Length: 335
Image (cartoon, rainbow, N blue to C red; front, side, top):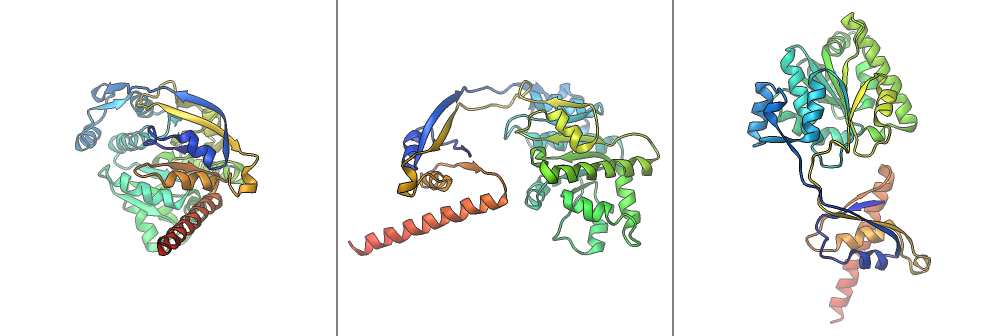
């Protein structure tokens, strides 16, 4: 479990951890890091990109953003492995704008591993000023899906939809031509959260992107790969994994060494369950999550593996909250 709490510096975290049924095995302090900026005019951005930045009041880019965009502009495949909240979305957006400005027929395919991420990112993509379409399970009408492909420069979908619809319906009498035209026009594929592409899901995705690459080259009648940008904050062997998933070689990694985003001082606690916690009914992740949620004006993020585990943590925390409220009411009634 990893928990990040940006407003807890003045709170005794160690006491909260111990009261929740855990022992602290080790502690590591990561020192503060100041931002490293690069002038946006040194990157060779188009007028459209500069307008995009002007609308957001962005005068400079962080170093890794500038380097990633430079690599993208010259046509390289890029894998971004900088820290969480280091502005990967802006890299996607500016790289996409540059591709779309170079070729008025080009389209962008943005892949997110979960439908919830599609919805979250859709609004961000619309800020580029280009038309954006989304295809997922909520878009069931075939005409609506066809319009999403034909009428938009940027299309967001999940690998599942890419498999069942984009490639699965390529010979469909109603949709086949629109799908082929879209695949032919795709110049850049963006894959976010690449660390989630592992196991069976990763293997299936690897076959999926190879099928897409082959169709793209066949429809373009050129032996060239589409350009890829992949991203993950927690990915070892990033270029190798990017190749394994996409089937495309020669990725350039933009990672921790180039990361120019600012970082506040952080303390990492390595913890284990207290031997007495089980007898006391403590020592569960939800105990710590709930304890952190009870602190006023403090925010925390908890990362666990898988949707089911996430649901379990949420439900257990809610049950603890409800029990606490019932106990508070009982105490109030007894006053």
